[in-house]
Length: 295
Length: 283
Image 1 (cartoon, each protein chain N blue to C red):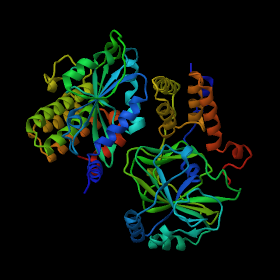
Image 2 (image 1 turned 180 degrees about the vertical axis):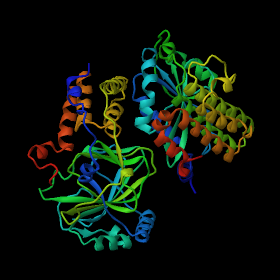
Image 3 (image 1 turned 30 degrees about the vertical axis):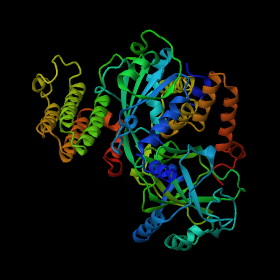
Image 4 (image 1 turned 180 degrees about the horizontal axis):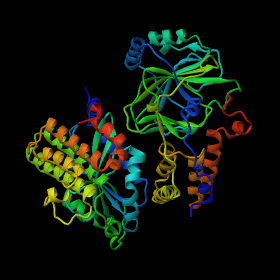
């Protein structure tokens, strides 16, 4: 039998989420001018970007960012927070990008370039947990991507294709992956709530992930246990975390499986660590207080 | 220019496979189940170039051999992002263990990683046989039938055979680049045989006939079978000594066969197929 924590969290068999449901979480907002986008792609790819690693617990390694607009004006200040942003030196070297941002005419909070390298993941999480409870949204301008790169939310993989401005409500649990590369490169614009509601998803944007079966979850947990027993503890954890990108998992289920793995192996300290990490990454305190999805 | 500057230059310009080798060594030496790590091939001999594969022998405690062999694929995929399941290597000689070939994206290209897993008790003999360089050597243990306990007792699935075609196709591409005509010829035959086996595994899993015998009578009795055999015939009609173009055509034919006869295998490998054809990572 599966451990109770795993079986309890099997997603209830239900009809597929509609595209309209998903579009409240992530959607195309508008098509971008092709020539301007090509100039932005060129200037970003040819600029010397001072990439900085941050948000360690949220990622597998391979998530790199550089700020264009932020509180301090330093390129490598990439931990977002509420502010009245100023331009960094990097933005000064990206004039077309600066024109795009000015032309948006939105209340900008923080703007970054973000790179996700091959075989890299942002684990399932909610954003804005440490910020004041003010409505805000996140806009994505995909600059370079590939078919193995996706945003996962609501049990679906969404391929954020190049050519559109995309809106994301990152207060819904979500993750991002770049399985096989090459690098995925996005311009990420956090804004205080503006007129960026609406939007749509094309059918080809969405891949509904299959529900995991009990047998499959049992096999994955057994394989993770074998890895851990052989001394590959971190790979075992990553193997379970990566289930989020292949199957429609219940919220937090992959973390529960890691907790269960460590309990089975008598590693209570690690089990407690992952239990706490789940609460942090999924902002359980804020969500329990009823803020989830509205911030 | 002083010696240390030259060393720095040599280090900076070493083939990228050394970085991948470092990563593999770091990963495997963390496991107490692993007793030996031996580097074989051109990386050990000092004549590696940018087409060289990473060739690593892994000595495993006998009692844990079957476990490591069973999950090494998950490990390679999780830690190194190998794009396909490991192909059970049928080219490497029998050295008392099991070999796998993985394709791993590394610094913008697909790199070939040959892993040979063997019980630690065989390591001394294996090292003498291959003249491999040891980067890790710890005491091992005897365990009877360690390898036999792992051996999966089943015929290759359509997915296994499609993986074989893709991996062997990758290897042939390197042979062509290196003008290794005879090996390219041999491996091209291997690719065609895997394509035939794929057709049989999908459309005649209970075949009563050996090898290439009676395909028309057994497979070609339906429109689906005849369509697959037309593609197989086109594949074997290609040049025995492949060119890059003929190789691409051959692999496209196999994918067309698999899409028709074993769509679930193609679907399972779809992201890998995308990257396999993606120019920046090709050989």
